[in-house]
Length: 273
Image (cartoon, rainbow, N blue to C red; front, top):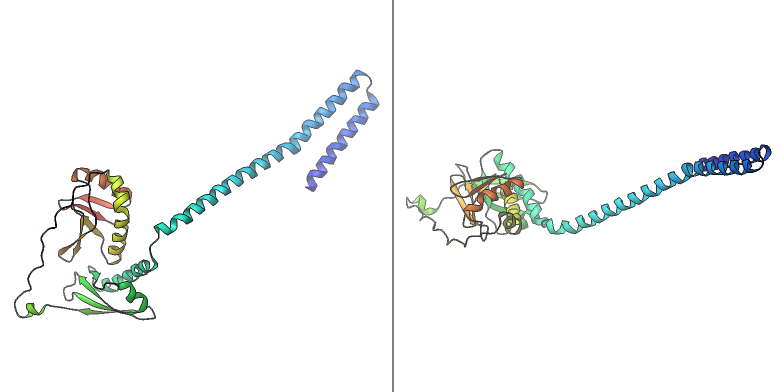
């Protein structure tokens, strides 16, 4: 500010000197033209020195305000979207614990996977206690009791549970393996099907399976998924419908754009992560 004032007074001083010089040495029409030229030159100098920087500064402030408003608007939009995308705290806590259990077991049995055999494992995790899990891919054990203490410690006791009928030489009858009646085929666009019906389901499935040591699953034509447990496939219903097989090449590309590896097999679409 002081610099600007000093420059302004310097310019005015120059103008005054020019006016006095013209008054002293020029007469008649020549004096009028010289006055006009002096004032015009001073006006151009003042405009370049003061007006142009002022216009640039105002333009910069306007752009800065507009960018700041856009950022604030985007931030508010992001804040509004977060609750819709976030999971309950208990679910997130359970996944963290699942990873700890997987690391604990796989440090001894690298190929092991497991599943909870508790209806509400998150309650045991948050309050402490003993929860039972079933283990796959371990020759000597098939279950384990996991103990959670109030200090966030975890202990795991390996178990081998065998049906009494097997001990008497009479194996237990096999479980019913009849296929459920297939759902009607879904012929919608694969991208639309993924966004509307599959994204959230797969997000939760992959988070849960990954926390328990799995790295792949297979989506079947009837909406079921199968995962490998030791030497057997565990099948569960996950989707109400799946696009017909003729749409699977396009569906594979949709999965790949979402960061998953996808392959079409005889049993269905194999997803890996």
